[in-house]
Image (cartoon, rainbow, N blue to C red; front, side, top):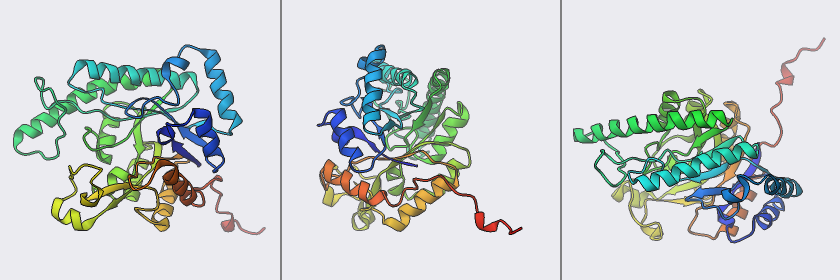
Length: 325
């Protein structure tokens, strides 16, 4: 496994400076944003898509710091009911897939997107219950749109030899493990998970069970290391579907936290071990979104926490079972 970082938290630095900062702390993989919500501060698609010389320069910069790109990130909503916004997100995603192919990057991370609840609606609609019955009908409509879109997109990704790792996220059609697997089964194996535990914690989903569930279908393409702390005194009153603004930290039912500040080392050792059990040996990419600290402090603490936990070497065979001749 490689310890990695999703780099938008260091957007105020040049890419070379961000790489130097991370390399000095033992990080070996990066997941730069190239569009959508992560932005493209470190890696602009238009700079590298059709310029082989620029791509060579990028490879040299990565090599100088002993780094590789675990995935290119472009999180947006290609299923948005606003045609212009959907088209922009689709272009970002397709260009990112093409750029990943040019750079020999195997994975693109993204969201599933979220349609409106019907053909005449203007706002994406996150359905969280099947009743009253029009909500079940809306959900069926959304899945029909998603399957059509992602079937074609998966074929495009396959043409470029790139896996698409969808981060299950609230306010997206796919927000939990069974949704990931349904979309994969309805399309192709190019579609899989960017497994981000932070969104599962507050929903009450067992992370290790989710890993085994997705891993049994070889459906984990990438992994985020991001923690969440649920504050039960608030959750007992508000529940976990909490619309309290993120800046009102003390009032929220849950917060994204720096790794180790939501769950301890024993839990994260179980997460890493379960990933190894299901055959995942890719990057563990730290994503910092903890509003109780700044990005540098949060990343440093997360790196220090995970560095001794992530397996760096390949798994060994059970040599102790071998008989003595």
